[in-house]
Length: 317
Ligand code: SER
Image (cartoon, rainbow, N blue to C red; front, side):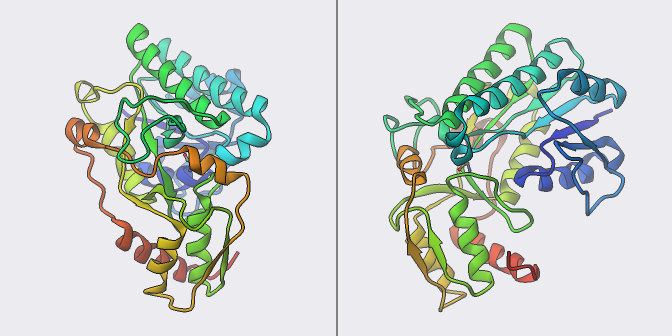
């Protein structure tokens, strides 16, 4: 019997993953948690709890009380937020992962999903079609914590046989929840503004290319990776996955196909340096080969679908 605990269920990925897991496992087999118990709109059978992931005693209690077999650990400070509070971000991003890996080491849970990021790469990494095993010199706190986290995952797998699985996510774009403090967030705000006929001021320069993905593909990727047989999961740090890559100016042009009056103006800030240090696309051939990663959306279909989705939401904020 599979029972899942989602940590960070109120966040950008968590909101959509929680309802998807309820469809996969049944709402009664999903427990959603966040610092404040998240509001569950689509499936009321899901139990919602408050949990500070750094509180190991409560974490263990929840796992035992609800007979959790797998954890999806999504709580973290993202790249831009982490730069404002490096010490705390390092502690949160690392200690929370170790707390969960230790529960798996003890055998209390059987599987862990933890997201990594394109932020593991740095200014010395190849910029385009970055290989799975490219040189990494991340220069953000977020990137350093993701890169160290990947190595901890691999360590727990090698040493203690912990079944932990991870993906290097690019910027994730969906219309069901707002982004939470990342460098790639500009794209989602641009799409949301466009859907509500409002111009957008980008905090990244016009020619700043970054990898992006539709949230639906990201969620499908998590489900597919977690459903794969253990022997298919050959990479135990984190898999490169990829679908689209574009600059703010390319995004503006694509949006104008549906919203001709939409315009982006530019006022870059500290997030530009973060974007400059990241690849604009990743080579995801190992994920395709090992467990059949295959995204549904490309750049144009992603933009069209997200604009459509936002049109249905009436709140312009
Ligand atoms: N979307 C994330 C960020 O910008 C990248 O993992 O921080």
